[in-house]
Image (cartoon, rainbow, N blue to C red; front, side):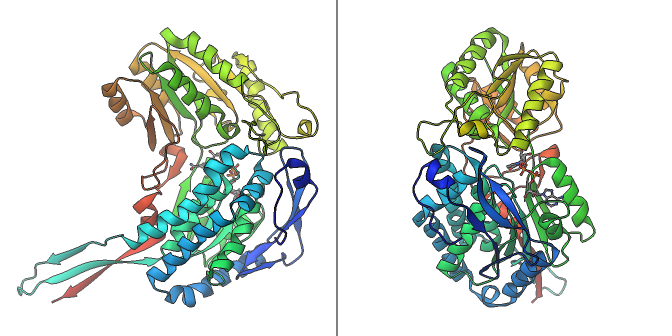
Length: 502
Ligand code: NAD
């Protein structure tokens, strides 16, 4: 990645085809057999980049480089020096903010207002947070009584795991990748990252930043490619990879878990969701409408934390559906670099087929499409993109597939309820358990429900308000383990106890 990405308009971005190569041992290299695949801009269907596709040998090269780095300069570096480097990574991402922004928008089509406020600053914040946090992690110690009266002292130390395989999705590429890379490196590990095949840009660019600030070669490696039979699977099978951290679909998590089982490797999984939002009649009505509009349509519904099941107390149901429909109608699609654009496309034509399939299924299952339900009529070049209408559904049974399965698009089903018990039962009637949003001004009810909803994160009168020190993860098929703050440190380091007889 040599050219600087400048000039924020869709037209002049479209004219230049980038070359995204593998980043191994501090260098950009081609795949060993020269294989490449195309990276498509979902806004207009044009090719953005040719991407080197790593095979098993390339993944092995990356893992061996990462393994050597563990016993080289990086492995011997003091904790403070290591964490200073990571703080500089954060600073350098902010220095090169516009380049990260443009690469992210080119890959995803997300509106500049969102990527500017969320994706890129969070990418930098992840490095800053974990650099600060790891400096201040205390370890436990115990004084133990012994029969001879002299006693023993037990104390714990933390050591890195080794080479960590990081497998990422496409919806928040830099943010979710650095959410795992930053704590892994802060704890002294090295990483081999497999970004999503849909969004290789920012992970590639981050290699330049690592070199610029002096992170030793081999500490951060990037292998591009697909999942099964490609770079993703090769990473999960590699014997020298000590742990796998993965964000993506629940089914992919299950496939990865089978692959790593033979090596008994630790896994941390952040998986899918079918998240409920519960709106009570006592809620601040306009705050609830704004909150649910955001939690349904943000990032074109492609956030694992989005609300796809909305339960509304019957007395305000019609008014709520009408107000939410009004919000959906105000979303503006088009050039992501324009500040007025508020909704981007889905990530790909393939994903659009999946989402449209659910819109059709909703009709077949007897639902009412209150608004949306198809493809918007947009001018060229957006008519070649993967845009889809924001959609609100009602009238489906709680057993309908559309209410049970994760769609991962700008769509929710709104269902009325008559009592708190009924709302709770419907919210919990799912295999998933990532997050919930409660809209009520009754504090007792809010705390009571928060303790009873089977999810990893409950928001009360907000959504996506994140303190990165808090535990993050899901129950059920939404994930295994918790990351965030000390929980990330606990995953990315091994605790060892030392017992000293005095
Ligand atoms: P995905 O599971 O299709 O792909 C994720 C990554 O896994 C990609 O890099 C892909 O190439 C790789 N992969 C696929 N099959 C593999 C295999 N067999 N072995 C190794 N690697 C493999 O997910 P996606 O479509 O990129 O992302 C959307 C999904 O991610 C949604 O389900 C969403 O809810 C979930 N998600 C969860 C969180 C969370 O924090 N819980 C955050 C974001 C996204």
